[in-house]
Image (tube, rainbow over all chains, first blue to last red):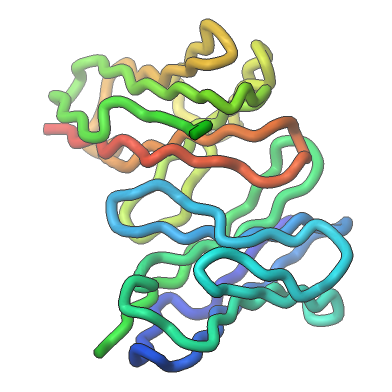
Length: 112
Length: 113
């Protein structure tokens, strides 16, 4: 069965520190992979996506993610976190049809 | 800018009183989705439209209905809201099934009193 796992429910980092949010997926075929960010009381904004090709993808706001097929992972990274990055982050996998599976999210707190 | 718009942003309704949430899009996308998101949880797909074809998720309660009168608009009707239906409701669109990312609206926060 298709699924997405985000092992970290909550992460706290200092402003300026690097960040890595983990995402593991289970999907039978080649997946489409996404990272979304959600600020409190807001909808979801797409940070980046992977469909095929280069396994390191760049997104908005200085984020990047790397697709590792052998590890079934699609971890999100940012070299230097800003206070405005505090939000909820969702990894998602999509495929054919209407399937679009979200992870349970990782809440990011940024401390000064 | 092309976008997904949801109205109202905040809705308060009474227990058992029908309520309708609205979503419109200027992206001209074929597919529109409704999600329910409870606090600290992932969005849960309720149903989607591919053009006028309605697809209900198996575990979506009968209390939830949807209408799509045209490409641009989609409505979520909750016939008899219960306290457990208080949540954020997110509308999303995509250019087609299996064609990639979904574009989300800002959501409607529903409170049931």
